[in-house]
Length: 219
Image 1 (cartoon, rainbow, N blue to C red):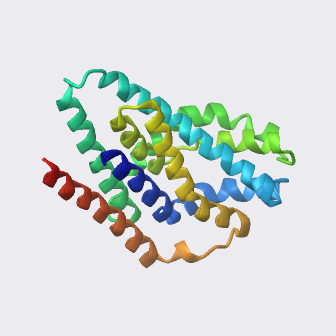
Image 2 (image 1 turned 90 degrees about the horizontal axis):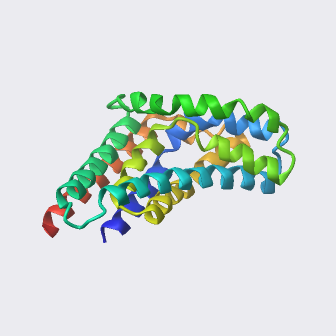
């Protein structure tokens, strides 16, 4: 049941994170389309590569959690990771709602990896073949993103490499409608409205609090 709740939270974070996606991914999505990535097949490859990288990140985090929780005896660690995951989900909601900006510091954590990988992106332009589109999308998936890094904690708390990969893949699928539209139109205006972003963030925060309340009933 906890695993299902984690997947639902990941999907919800992806779906409601459209405002953040527009700011973080709008530029690179538009660039890939403008530089040869036109057509739904190439766009699909971009996103498959991106979501694949998310799954790799989640798998690594889940494996680390699996090692940390090697024995069922380490229940306090498991509980601490669960509470941390709920806290990060609440933080994401407040961040999306514009009520807290601390998540920007989390995004800085992946800056080094992104600088190392992004140098290869110009070599793949124009992304006019499926192979180049997949590779470009895979690099895109390592763009420093507070939403991704926050869901990494959920993957870590899952205590399973496979479950962690699934968690981040589900998150990526949740982002797909928003990021696809942002990349294809470059002017999709739904998430430009502060009220829309505020409602989305508060809904996600409410989901995190609901998860905590339900957890208290289990214990």
